[in-house]
Amino acid sequence: MTFERDQRLIHVMGPVHAQQAGFDLRCGRLDVELDEHMYAHRLIATEQPELRSDGPPHISLKAVTITALASPTRIESIIAEGGVRALSQKPEGNDQLQADRMETELYPISNQPRLLVATGNVVVHSNHAGAVRNLETSILRLDFAPVMQGGEARLKHALTPAGTVEFQDTATLPAKPSVERMRLTAQRLEADFTGENDLKELRGSQGVRFERQIGVGSLQTTTSQEMIAQFAAGGGWSTVDQTENVQLRQDNESAQAERAHFDRASNTTVLEGSVVLMDATSRTTARSAIFNQTTNEVRAAGRVATVESSTSGSQFVNFAPGPGRVSGDQLDANSATGHAVYSGNARLWQGDSIVQGDTIELDRQTHTLTAIGQVHAVFPQAAANAAPQPSRKRPTKPEFWHAQGNHLIYQSDENRGRIEQKVRAHSDEGSMTADAIDFFFAPAQNSAISSANATGKSFVGTPNGGATGEQLVRASAFGNVNVEQQGRHGKATRADYAAEDGKFVLSGGTPTVYDASGNATQGRQLTFFFGDDSINIDSAEGLRTLTLHQVEK
Image (cartoon, rainbow, N blue to C red; front, side, top):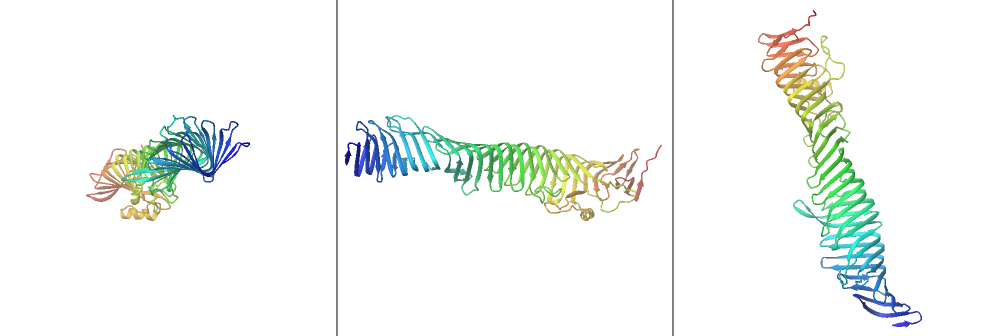
């Protein structure tokens, strides 16, 4: 040891061991600067210095240089520079800090940290009861709460202007626990802690990016301007709230909203404010939406509207080429099964075809549409394949059939639909009521229409339909059938309509046709044509034709 009185310096060389108020210092060289009263003012430890405190907790600090600023009664602050390594150990876990420089201010009497500022390549690693946290930043400020002498340091607040935090914990998936990984990056991070040094709340702002992955599952990424994460006792996160331009992405699915709320216990995500949901096949807008990642269920509410993104056709119906559109007050769907239910003023349209009802149910796997409650459907009718007889007046503009009832099911793969319960169907040519009506469709090509009418079978096409869309080629009504056209009424238990020549064939029961004057015509089968006064009668007397003429008075 050398002492330079004029410079008020003490130099201690060789293995140095110094102790003061719970601190234990070991190094190869210690330089002590004295104040005017010859009390130690600054202690500079070099040559592999290490500062220890038996705590609680047990603390170890290593650096190229460790400097302590002291008063006659206590150490006021500690500065570590160059390759700083700090370790805090407790039975339940440990915390590690690395930085280029670290300065710690101490409380009087207790000698516990009051403020810690780490700068330059700061890395923090924490492992408590299996919950792992990592932080990377350029500056880290830690504020500690005051404690009694001999008490444990209590972390109160943490702040970093920009950084990345990583979490690793255990998440419980159905039937097995899995490792959950989270990563948070922001231009500003703040954290509050409980009295037990557990992380209570973490806030991020400006360019927030939040990543989450459970086990070997796909990565979920969320970006926003603001974020608040709440943590439960013991370290695991409980909820995360993100606001301002929230963007979510997972696999080929994405979403955006003004606000997002993640709940760990229920494994749900709630989106609110101008919600947009997108996947490989569709885009849905709503006021709010909630996802259950365990069950793959989603519920959207408030002016829900879905537009399919496929240009080749719809995943559910094949009424026309191009995508379909669906709307309603609420949507309940399952992304795994492809099942979706739109309720409350539900409406689907594709090309010229429209289906409305209290609810519309779509099944992507079976390509089936089901509408229930006050159903109203509009279908374009196929044009005639052959020129009509001179006496028959066929429309020159496109024809549409309107069907109403309480239950409609449409099977896209079979190109057919059935409407039931208080059914009424009408077009410009006429109308009919029945207990149920089957509609058969085919691509808008004359050959397909002729084939469907000739064989009596529906045209079975590709799931997404032909390039020209689907049109009604024939229909069959069952039950209490009543057909009306230009003052004529037909009754039977069955009616078959062919769009090719605009004719109705009544059969079953006692088919009867009444004219405007109340005259009745009966037969085993009655065939009459829209836009024509002739009726073909098949009866016990054979086949004959009756022409009804209106007599002017």
